[in-house]
Image 1 (cartoon, one colour):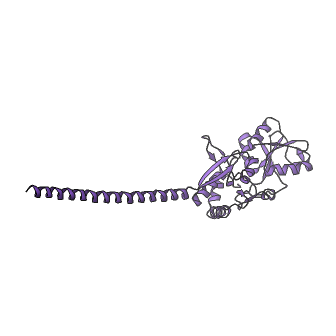
Image 2 (spheres, helix red, strand yellow; image 1 turned 60 degrees about the vertical axis):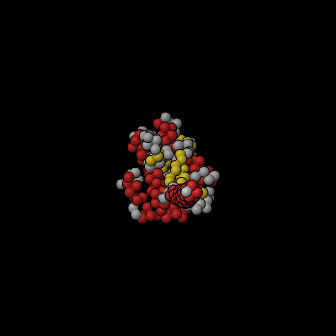
Length: 275
């Protein structure tokens, strides 16, 4: 009887141990598979997020309303800003913007600091030697801005005057070319808004700038002005480092925005259309 009980308890103990061992193996196996599945899902999710949120780095010079400037909260706003965001949305990029002086934008592209530039930049032949451009998306022309009592209404009236321009712009190139023929001095500043300050402080007689920007300053500051009749500037385009792999896909997105009327809607929003 004692032997039978002893055998019974031994058999029971062995059975319990076997059951526990089987449970642990199953749990261990189950946990391992679960951990492997979770890790794989996390990696796939991270990879998907990375693809969806690939950053598109853009530089601009936010002193050029209505193309690019800052709102009262310090956020970028303007025609170029809206187009850039529309392109990023179309292609699934996250748009990251950086503000800098206009004359530093091409250098930022050449150094690889940014992927593209949108800053009301005209696609001139000289710039094309250093950067590549997208298709054109807007054209406005140039204008001379004066005080209302200046009695400067033509190029001939510029003789002996000081004409202010922004560094690195197509207006700088135009003023340098015209100054010899019409006998005026060229003064160069870092930002477009400084031209109005220089004009109101009588440090320059005339500001020479993009027509759309000029019209905004004329209305806001109660100034006068006249169109530049001498040249038709090339249209505005997005600038890229030479050989950029982004050009084709951004051109495709930009052409889509042109064809579907988005660019026209934004021109109307920012009052860039001819009345």
